[in-house]
Image 1 (cartoon, one colour):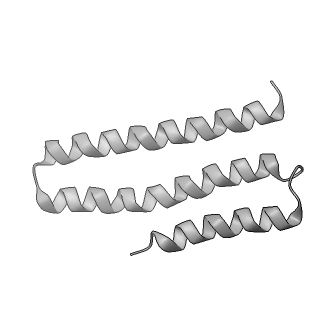
Image 2 (cartoon, rainbow, N blue to C red):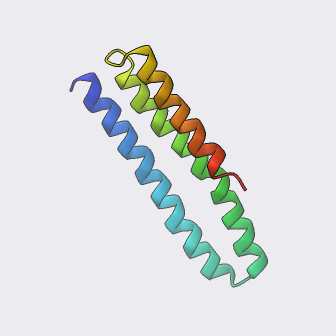
Length: 89
């Protein structure tokens, strides 16, 4: 398997793990039957989401680094930073 396919597989695996954590969190919220616990679980998910976003984007940028001009790479990284800043509460 070439390098790009490994990177895509890694990106997909991280998203599968993230989605599984979301489903597990939903089950835990229902199982706990507590608003306080549900908010705590949701807060923890709020920490995991940006971490997954950064890791998945880092893999993608790594794969594109050799093919993109420095200008386009800077725009791509700036876009990721804007997403992270825009989603902060």
